[in-house]
Image (cartoon, rainbow, N blue to C red; front, top):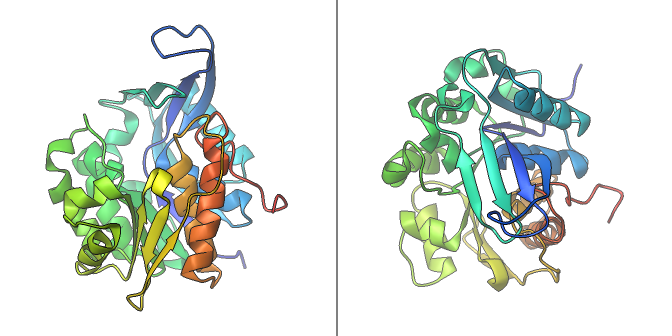
Length: 299
């Protein structure tokens, strides 16, 4: 019998073109890769030794084909990736300084309704993951994200990931709140979580989020490190791992995936924070959304 997936993640993945020789407006050389919070997490879980599947919708175009092939090459299961014959795969244009421009309006992922989850063994997965981005892409993916959590029997993990310029960005709190209430584990940057629950400190914010239902809340604070409220109500903190920051995009996804991986294996919250910091720093030191995630042999 096939082992259950450690992680099934649902969301949008786009072709990512990264300026590598200057700012986005002046660069002449770009590196082509792929980017998406959920698929980044799948890559990280796979590199750390787990089994992951990404569920999503891409266009019937070279970008979509490239994404699916790249994820499969990483060992991510792509059996449930749908192909849209009429809508295109989204595009990210960005540079290493953090400037990002999206071309995703009307993308294939924006109409990924609940049928994309048909036949996906959600109930058997040890954990499922989606993000606030998915809830803001359109009514169909928002409905699908909630359906994912309703079907899940393992850990339901949510990375809040607020983004501007999406279909539901102006109603982010409204759209994300049902996922927060259903989640077991919530991740978010301090400013993102404060948009949901104000608080003077990271711990205050985490406790306010936990009062909505999640049993575990992780607060990412960039150069200030990270903290987590464990299921017993204890607060833990970790300093950021030392790193030379080259490209910050994707570091938070790696942090969250590594944290989740440690917890799925029975590790403590402090150990999960430390592993998250290690993997996040490794990604920040490398060009690309997930290329820098250490593989299991690179301990």
